[in-house]
Every structure is written in structure tokens, then in C-alpha cells.
Image (cartoon, rainbow, N blue to C red):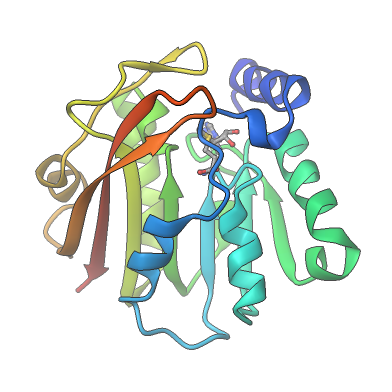
Amino acid sequence: MNSSMKEHWNEIYAALDVDELTWYEESPEPSIRLLSKCHINKDESILDIGAGASTFIDYLIDQGFSNIIAADISEIALNKLKERLGVEKASLVKWIVDDITQPIHIQNLRDIVVWHDTAVLHFLLEEKQQRMYSTILKKVMRKGGYVIIAAFSLEGATRCSGLSVERYDQNILARFLGKDFSLLEYFNYTHYMPSGEPRPYIYTLFQKN
Ligand SMILES: C[S@@+](CC[C@H](N)C(=O)[O-])C[C@H]1O[C@@H](n2cnc3c(N)ncnc32)[C@H](O)[C@@H]1O
């Protein structure tokens, strides 16, 4: 576990209410749009990597998905999400505090049918961190499974939450995932932060061949 990164994210989540976070979405519409293309059963596993306190988890529970895994480096983020959900709904989720760049628990997962990442990969700047992310993704995903990745686009911000970010488009992400993944769909999406400022993203959907 990268303890300075863990501290960094814990401090951010401790300092702000969830709806003050620059990436907060009242409803995760672009993720919902891509998930609707996945045609999966409600009991198939969905891993939200770097879930933070995302409303995507609320959506999945409300839609009746029963095999949801929320993983994040920040236990404060996941605790805030648990609190919002309440005990009953939170008990429907498998919670994992782990670092995708130095994983202990995530690498033991198998048969993941949807890998969902909004605004996490773009914080991994070192090649070895990116390599670990893609190694774990390939290891835990089921054949035929889907990968949703949303990252800052090439027109997007160069920094977020006090950290530098790497920017992406669909071609860079396709190269990153490699030949075993087919790009099914992508679109540009502008997220508006609580301040009203725009944050351009690229949203992508891949399928493991
Ligand atoms: C910008 S936030 C996005 C949160 C969530 N995906 C959403 O869209 O609301 C980035 C998230 O990635 C998590 N994170 C950052 N680095 C991570 C790592 N190495 N492993 C796991 N989670 C990480 C942070 O704690 C934070 O919750």
C-alpha cells in the first residue's frame, strides 16, 4: 500500500462532504449509459475500482445487482459511502480497502464481469503502476466481460485534487488494454464540478475477447 497516497485521499475525503468533491455526480449518467450496453445478469460481479463514495454503487443496488464490489485505497471514502447507503444496503456490497498499484486483496478476485473505473487510472503516472493496473485487470476479468474506463480526455485538466494526471483518448486506452480487449463504444463527456467549471472526460467501453 502506498501510504502517502492513502493519506492524501483520506485527507480529501475527511475534509469535504461527498457532494463537495469535484468529481461528485448526483447521478452517474455516463456510467449508466455504458452499463446498459453490457447485458449482464443481476448476479454477475461488478467491481468498482477506486469507487470512493460514488453514487454508481447506490444505482447498482437500487437496480437489484447483487454481486457488487467496491474497492478503494481510502477507507474514509468507503466509510462515507457505507454511511450514505445505511446498514442494510451496505451489507449487499463487498468492501475492499486496497491499492490497485500494490494490491493485496484485489488480485484474489476472479470472474469479474464488469470492471468500472471513473477517474482512477489517470492518477497512475508511473509505468509500473499502470502495468500493475492492467495486469490485475486482465487477471480478474472473466472472458467476455466488460471494462468501463472514464479518464480525463486530451482536452481535460492536467491536475486534480493536488495531483498531476495523465490524459487519455479511446486509442490510448485501447493500446493500454491490448489486443485481448475490443473497443465497443466511447464518447466525450463534460462533467461540471460543484464550482460550475467543466471537466472533459473520455468514457470507454471495452469487452474482453
Ligand atoms: C477522483 S476520485 C473518483 C472516485 C469515484 N470513482 C467516483 O467517480 O466518484 C479517485 C478515487 O480513486 C481512489 N484511488 C486513488 N488511487 C488509488 C489506488 N492506487 N488504488 C485504489 N484506489 C485509488 C481515491 O481514493 C478516490 O476515491
